[in-house]
Image (cartoon, rainbow, N blue to C red; front, side):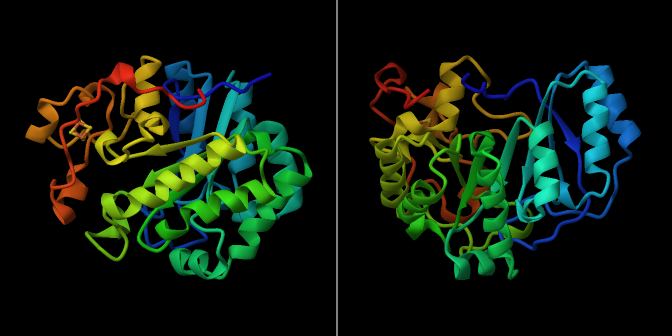
Length: 302
Ligand code: SF4
């Protein structure tokens, strides 16, 4: 049976308080404040949630109480659990196996398939552990539960097409590749060494999306305006949300920048828009009022 996308009904639980990486692009770094499981459960009960995403400031799988939390969520009628992780601790085969039986989706943040780029971006030497985590999921036939998050940044954008080749060669059964344009928040701190220009990324993301289509691997791109995705607008994550009647931007994501060029644009309702934190670095010269209409864009593979 095809897995359903969990989106609007989520309760974002504060599941972590530290991390085992130190990513240059992290926009929500840990502050060391541990959330009490009791409070999380209380929130879930009050909200009557049946879908929970375990994430937060840091890495959920560094939380020694994570399995207890998951069991308690299940006791409290949560049927769908998604965990957002860097995948390092999935290299522990026993833990990985236990999680597979409890978790519906693994969102795995993997910034590169190239060891030197991965280690540079994560300021670590843990590339092999991240790959082992994916290999464990593969061994237990759980790749259909995996959404790979690939944060597009200055160090990896030239390899986006190669990244899709690598996924296709090694993990073609994954559920989705979600390319996300880096946000200028947290550790990014206005750095042009981390945030690339939309126009520089465009040919590479276009190639990556078209390759994923060729390989029959579902892919979307998030946090890039439609006018900088010429010809591949149908892969926009926000456009898909618009098409299915959701709010265009996910809960907790800052609103679009107010740009005059967007006010008169026929795509505005289905577009992520540009973010103020991007404009602070590069301005709005790449943003162009589109002549397309939302109805003329065909959503890809949904
Ligand atoms: S002009 Fe604004 S609304 Fe139109 S596609 Fe570009 S960013 Fe989106």
